[in-house]
Image (tube, rainbow, N blue to C red; front, side, top):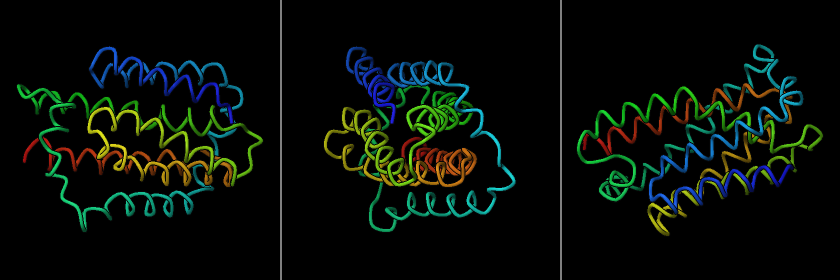
Length: 206
C-alpha cells in the first residue's frame, strides 16, 4: 500500500473540514489530493482501465453484494432518526433541494471515479496480493469515511461508516483479483445512486 498517499488524502479531508466547519470543502480538498496521486501514478493505473467486457460477471456480482449490503440496514434502522443533524451538516435549510441537486451531480460526475482510481489504483500498489489489498483498503477506506461522518454525527457517524470497511475490502480485493477497476467503479456508482436516493427520501423530502 502507498500509505503516504492514503494518509495525505485523509488528512486533507479532516483538516479542511475541521478548520472550515464545512464538509463539502473537506471533500473537495480530499479529491484534489486524490487527483494529485492519480496524476503522479498514472502509468501504473492505465493497465487497470481495461477488461470492462471480460469482468462483466465480477461487476454484476460485486454490484449485487455492495448494494445489497448497503440496503440491508434499512430492514432494522430508520435513517429518519438522524435527519435533522445530517441534513444540517450536508445541506442548508434554505434551498435544500437545489443544493442537493448540485451535490448529487458532483457525486455522480466525480466522486466514485476519483475514489476508485485513487484507492484501488494509487493507494493499492500494482504488486499487492488480493488479501493484502482487501485489508489495507478496508482500514483506509473506513477511516476516511469515519472522519467525515464522525465529525458530523459523532459516534453515530463512526458506526455508520463501518459498511465502508466492507466496501473497501471488496473493491480492493476484486480489483487485484481481476486486474481491472471496472467492477469496483460500476458497483461504486450503483452504491452512490442508492445513497443519493436515500438522502433524497430521508433527508431532503421527508
